Every structure is written in structure tokens, then in C-alpha cells.
Length: 595
Image 1: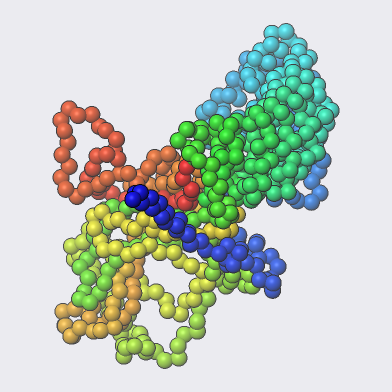
Image 2 (image 1 turned 180 degrees about the vertical axis):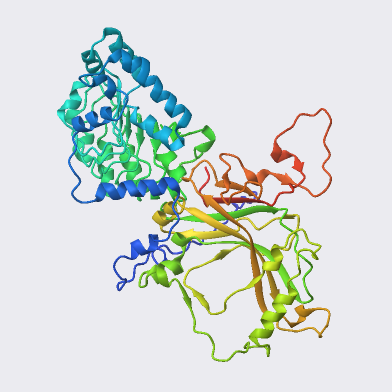
């Protein structure tokens, strides 16, 4: 009898991932009867970072009406007029005196008396080209102003930035050996490629008003290897022009625009045969869950992505197509890694429950706030109910005057308190008449400890609106560390020694720390960006931890043994005693698909 054939092992079906609906999401929906101007209302009251605030101001200037026309030649003359070159090009200028007296005096004034802002402005006004002193020395040596004018047309690097330029002209072609041209921070809407020197290798057009690439990209100099178009007005409709870029284009910077469709832009970029460096961060498409995986699959020649070198381990082992929803959404995560050495609270009364938690607002990711502002103004986000007609608490027979008396008696004087801080004497009761039309996101609540840990991630929000998610990482998030005391409705037996027994039910709270975290652009190679704050900093601004990972730090309340003669190792592999300063460690990030 022949042996029975082995039954093939039945494969378990791949579990289906439960994905929230994108089309029905309240972060995307706009009601038919929404009042006009809702997007402006949504962005009102947002605390943008310093950089983002400056960018938005520049964009407002770019889009205003009746901008005066300033050609390249006029902008170039204005740039010289505000630089130290101007003193050497005036008709009655004494070149030797300018070089030996006025230039050293100016440099000394800037070095000794200018603040940081003044030094930045001076540097910006005198960045026309590299090694300007060499050009000036040559002019002084020959004693001829014409030498300086002639040498300026033979430079390799030219920067005419922040000059309110609106258009190029043929005078630019006089710089016939130009290699690098920087026209950042102007009001250019179109580029006449015929005015560009044909030997140009690097063209920087960041922070202009460019939205259409088709008219000029295909006519750019053939040897161009770098093109910078960051912080312009590019969107999905602009993607078509990217595919018409020069054959030898090696690095393309289109970061911080409004491109939302990742598949569309990657298809266009895949037609550039020499592209090895791409900067796409700051676009809505760069915060989707499948950003890095899809980009590295479709552009296998990339060596650098968003200023990060692409390593072998970054590339997916198999070219798996991501789920379509992973190209249109992501999860925002906030994590409280730990809170250390918070002031120890006094012993609570019998029946009272104490806890610590962290709360924050995320206005651009708050669907409740968004839906409310579709029909109302920002001033009405907080409303107050009218006071009740009677003067009694709804659940107790205590009068308001008695409650105030009890609360005043319950506050322990700082001199008689054995506790190290009197901040816990400042407990306040939440106003029950206050109605808020936005969400306060809260962490889980924990009991006091020298080292308090929270669940990870502490807060996780599904974000199908990639523009809102991108913009959230351009804001400053304010966090509050809260201590709360919750009293139940049951009253203990009267005790003459304690006035706390007469407290009405409810929650009292106090803010122990207010911390501001200025978020940065999302980095595909880092799972989250970390922030450190402690009360010795003397400010509410948290420190961005760079590429460091605060989550790997290990603390212990036990005695730490140090091995004599052993060098310090990685702080993440060695447990350390918690610091005495009130310290907080936070992290903000997005969940992405791993390679």
C-alpha cells in the first residue's frame, strides 16, 4: 500500500488591519453650509514656530496686490548699494581710504556692538559672492573702480537674495562664467530660462512665488545638477513639470511645498535618470505612513533623502506595495517618557484621590474644534453658562460663603507646612459653568513617585488630513503637568481638627509646570523628536534633543554602583539615579511603515 501523501500545511490567512475611514473623517469633511473663511478661522490662534511665522509673512508679501516690478539688474544694484562694495564704487570714493579706514571701522563696530540680529543682517547684505575682500583688494591694488565692476561680472557665485525681485532680465547673461546662482527670498513667479548663463550648475530659487514649472524647467541649462525650489507654491498640479528637468539633475529640493499626492510626485521623479538626492520633507505627502518605504522603492538610485544618507538597512527587503490608505494618512503620537522629581504632594484626606497627568491642545488635529469653527468665530471657543439662581451646590447643602471659608482654612501656611513646596496650596476648582468647544488631550493618570512613567504612546491620533498633520509640526505645542485631587460625594464623620471633611465633591487641580515644545520638520529616519525640560533652565522652552533618544535612558531609585576605572559607556545601557531637578521628557512623532 503506497504511503499517504503529506497534507500540505494550511496557511493562516493574513489578519486584516482595521483602518479608520478616511473619507468619513471629521478632519476632512467640510459641511455644505459651512460659513466662508473657515480655513482662516481654523488657523487663527495657532502658535507657529519662529521660522514658520517668518515664512508665512513672506508668503503674504508674495501674494499681495500691486507688487512693484523690480528686475534683476535693479535688484543687483540695490544689493550692492546696501553692501560694503558701495563705498568702493561711488564716483568720488577714495579706494585706499575706504580699504584702510572705513572698512576696518565698520567691521569693528559690527564685531563689538552689534547684536545677533545685526550681525545676521550685515552678513545677509554682504553675501553677494564668495571672498568679496579679494575683489576689493584687487581694485585697491590697481586703484581703478572699473576693475571692481569688471571683476564682478567674472564671479562664479552670485547671491541676490531678499531683494523683492519680480523678474529676470538679460543683464544676468553678462555673468558668463557663473556656476552658482542664488535668488532666494524674492517675489519671482516665473523664470525666463533664456536669461540664465548656460554654464550654470546650481540654481537656488527657494522662498519665491513659483507655482508652475512647465514653462522653464525644460529650458534650464543642460549641465544643471542642483535645483532648489523649497518653500514655493508648488502643489499636485505642479508635479508634471518636474519630469521635464535636465538630464544631469542630481539633487532636487522641493521641500516645504504643498504636494499631497506621493504616488504622483514619485512617478514624475522616476523619469530623472541622474537623481541621487531628493528633499521632499515638509510637504503633506512626506508625513504619510508609507513615505520613506514608497520613496525608496520607486527611486532605487537615491543616496540621500531629506538630508539623510540612505543606508542599506533603510531599503525594504521586498518591493511590497503599501496600502492606499498608508499614502493618505498616518498616526500622530505623543509620548511622556518620564517625569522625574516632581514636588512631593502632601498626604491627601481620607476619601480623596490624587494623581498626576499631562495635558495639551492640538488645535489642527482637533476635529471638535474644526467642526465648531465651520460655523462660529474663534472668540466663542470658550463660553460661560449663566450663574444658577440659587446659591446652593446641587449635591450638598453648603453655601458658597461656607465653601470659601473652608477652602481658606484648608490652605496650610508655608511656614507650618512640612512639604518642600507650597504650590499644592494653590489648588483651584474647575469652573462648572465653563463650556469649551475644543479637545484637551490628556495622558493617563499616575500616582506620585520620584520617577513617574506613562503609557507609550501616551496619545495616538489618526490623521487622514496630511496638511493638518504637516502643519502641526510647524507649531509650538504647550504642555501642562497637572496635579489633581478628586473628592467623592461621600462625606466622612465630622472632625473638629480637619476642615477638609467639609469639602464639596469635585476635582481640584494645580499646574506644576507649563512647557513649550517647538516642533521640527518630520524626519523619516527618526521615529520621533524628543524634548527635555527641567526647572533649572529658567524658561518654559524645552530643549530639542537633536538626534538623541531620551527613551533609552534608564533610571533607578536603588543605589547606583560604579565600577572603578571603568570608562563611561552609553548612557542608555547604564542605569543612573534620577536628577533632583523637576525634569520632563517628551516625544512627538508619526507611526511609519518600517523597511
